[in-house]
Length: 228
Ligand SMILES: *[C@@H]1O[C@H](CO)[C@@H](O)[C@H](O)[C@H]1NC(C)=O
Ligand SMILES: *[C@@H]1O[C@H](CO)[C@@H](O)[C@H](O)[C@H]1NC(C)=O
Image (cartoon, rainbow, N blue to C red):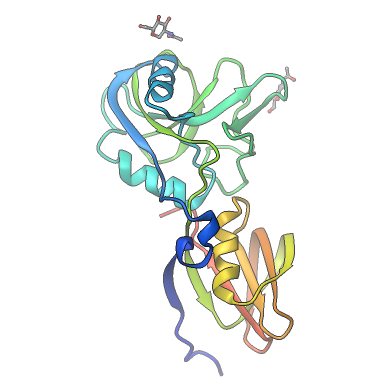
């Protein structure tokens, strides 16, 4: 009965809604010259960045893919980004301390955690891998607490039923746009449900969709996925 609904695709710029957190879009900087990871990271810091760019969200990942498309192939392929093996946890983590989520396009989940594979890179396939730090490659610099103010996704006047989901938070908000923006600001968020009767915004992490239900007073924001 509801097939006629048109889904709205939109980009929200948080600056419009949340002036206090108003920042910039991703401030990533591509180092085109080939150098090993240690030297590239030093150069990033000298340029005023915290280090390599953290790609913990679909938005950041896609931005990095666009930025690096001409540089990912070649003899010493790949491009250094901001995730490192952390010996004290025996885990590979983003350089802002967050954990790569299960839908992040690393070849395995969790990503390889080995001292011999200390740093992450984007490879020619546009996938992420942990690897060595001595090969000379380009790199992307970024700031680690500089969350994007961009949420990209689709809204629909419906609820997605899921076979598995992790509720990240429930909060009071006034509009589905604010709810979508909040999702975009939360690196684990993949789906946000705004209930316009209760004025609640529920943020959901990775999920498996099973059906779409059109009756409830819910507007759902489905964040874009990592894959193209
Ligand atoms: C670190 O974790 C990996 C699995 O991700 C495991 O194979 C390895 O044995 C662990 N190493 C140490 C030192 O605990
Ligand atoms: C990286 O390059 C610098 C300068 O060439 C060198 O001093 C350093 O040992 C290299 N480090 C690695 C891990 O290859």
